[in-house]
Amino acid sequence: MAGGKEIRTKIKSVQNTKKITKAMEMVAASKMRKAQERMRAARPYSDKMRRLAANLSQANVTEYRHAFLDKPESVKRIGLIVVTTDKGLCGGLNTNILRQLTGAMRQWEQEGVSEFSVTCIGNKGLGFMQRMGARVVSHVVQVGDAPHMDKLIGPIKVMIDAFQNDELDAIHIAYTRFINTMKQEPVIEQLLPLTGERLGTPDRAWDYLYEPEAKVVLDYMLVRYVESLIYQAVAENMASEQSARMVAMKAATDNAGTVIKELQLVYNKARQAAITKEISEIVGGAAAISG
Image 1 (cartoon, rainbow, N blue to C red):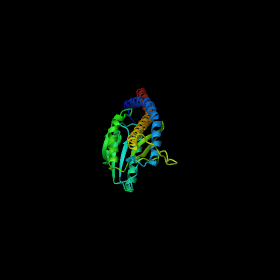
Image 2 (image 1 turned 135 degrees about the vertical axis):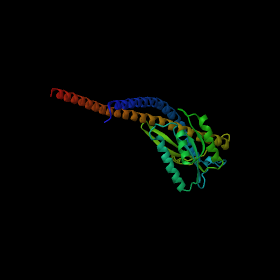
Image 3 (image 1 turned 180 degrees about the vertical axis):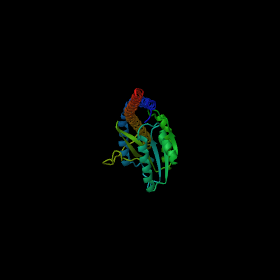
Image 4 (image 1 turned 90 degrees about the horizontal axis):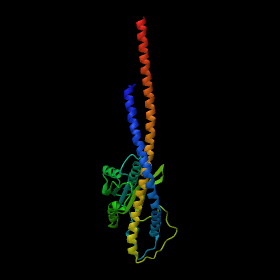
């Protein structure tokens, strides 16, 4: 059995760890509320853009057909926008989405996809893709606690330009969607060409009148559409990150408390054994003297 001094050192160490995890839990809880507010504020606009894009994908546009609306005959080259966190200590958040993405990539390869181009938003995804040997064409890290389009626009434009120049047949985005504080869902969605799979295919074909003309409106609006969905994905991922970190740090704090109780019990047993030994030695010594 370990000595009393060694056990006290372990208890002190775990107590210090518990203080750190408790502080991190409180910080994550504070950031989580702000991240959830940003994410929920952006959802109505994002969902409206999705619905409009789903309608446009089925619309009868004869005067101008944007490249984002054209579905290729076959998909051989896929662009991936991978949204992860910059920091760890958030449970299995990054592991889950990267595992799902790896499985999807294997599935696409079996279906005939020969090339992947990757844009990474977040340090964890960037490191994972580099270790895999993936072709990373752009990335952004240290995004901060709030998403800003001025940081995201550069890496995103690289991917969008590649699609418009026929260098890619499709673009997918992988991120973690916020469900509630205890549940976050890894998601892989197709951004381009436009699809209504998230909201379902419209019941009927739509027709639109454009002012000043279809090309001007669609060229501007569809790029904004892609940017808005990527912004929403990053906001969802940040809300998921803080929720997952708060839960993980609470679990770590609770586990530290359990370990401290167990160590204190071991320490008390060791101390009791030492006292009993001393008493036995004293009694034995007194008996020897009196004998």
